[in-house]
Image (cartoon, rainbow, N blue to C red; front, top):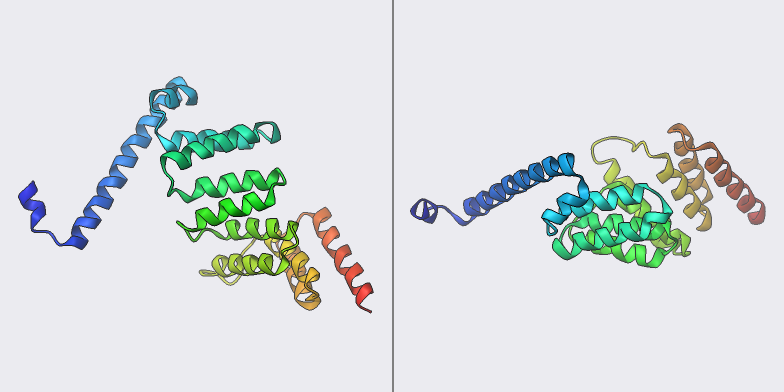
Length: 213
């Protein structure tokens, strides 16, 4: 085996190691699923406390339970980060929970940490934009919304995310880019934005237009 590997190029060896890593993760994941289904999540973690995917699953489950479980969810995501500090989604999820707890600055920091390892899905930039808007950093918020739109339209003409368009409209209104805001509102409407939220955005636009006259 050693002799067989010695003749391979560096690039081939790197690919080989990556394939071995994926196979190991698949086997470990299968083990976790079997133990979890038979004995429950807590038992799976007890048997292998260093298996980060188990902690990630626990964090997601706790975050879905609502505000009373947010602190415990954060602890679970922190365990993921301790075990696998280059796993970006643990930072994204931790940041999301911190944002829902109104701790926007810390939420942004966590998302930035995750973005060091992974450029992220459109929803990550959308969430970060929302949190930036909440602390009145509207220019930075708009930059993140633009990045979300860019990433969401790489393989299609439009991204079907009414929340993104509506929140982008809010930031544009703050920046006095009212015509651009109207276009975002139209897209939010097109893709079925929640009516009450859409009403708030339209009312904000109307108020801004009155002050500009």
